Image (tube, rainbow, N blue to C red; front, top):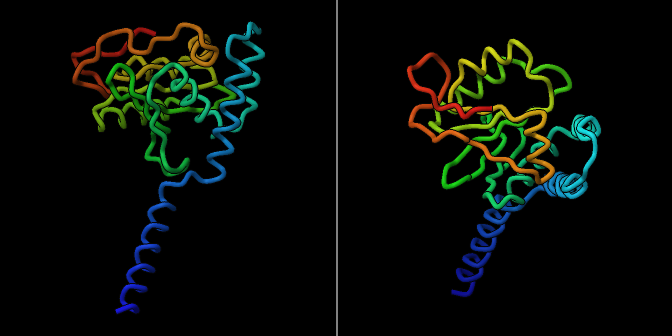
Length: 196
């Protein structure tokens, strides 16, 4: 009887350890979140030239940049949903609940122009999940990127002054237009893209 009880206790302890392991935040994630919080505090309310902000963003670790964006949304009172891992995340770097609507977040840490294929892939992901999205990047949008954005629906591009507004605590409101049921790439008769 006592042997069965001991085995049962060992089995329960092993199951609890396994469950705890899946819900624990890895050390690298904690480090990046800490770096993002520090960077956010350094930016908030600072009146510095946009060039300095942009240069610091481009110098950041790309994965810490993802965390910085989610931190900025949390500081604005929105619920951020983080992925369990940074790579193999299925194309979305996280999600944010804004006014009861779930927005997918794609963070791109560019030094140059946006790659149109990345925007198009994200638009397809949003269409597949039937959710709106924010493609947030540090680079230039460029002509080819703009042509993709004009054809993609359901996503917003956040860069430049809008990105700095998000990160410095200045007024920032995603989704200026009411959402519709249809989101995604392609020529459809609907328009649900919020004005940039």
